[in-house]
Length: 151
Image: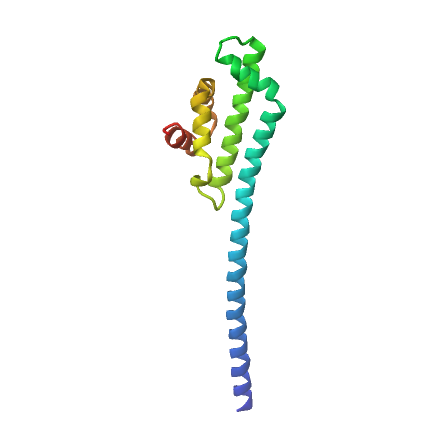
């Protein structure tokens, strides 16, 4: 009789331990998801900061070229530099989009408005996009064409 009672007590304690472990695991998963979201947002901010730092470091070069393009005074070298610059911009945005697409964030976390302003103020970026978009995923192309350029 005592063996049956003891085995029931051990079984009950074990079941309570399993339930407590499941509750603890759920709590840890929630914390981990919050951390992943925070890290994903941090990666987006870091990507934007890296691009802005690039612009600041090269402000004398690329800013001058972007200004000169509006006056149609570019040399072949400057046209090449501008082309490389727009490739960098598009690839940076694609990387940021992929970060969002593969993580816990959604497209609303991307700076669509500022991207749209950059497209509007730089016709050469639009030309570069039309040439380069075949190199990117269908989802990213849909996002740029449908949500960014439509603004």
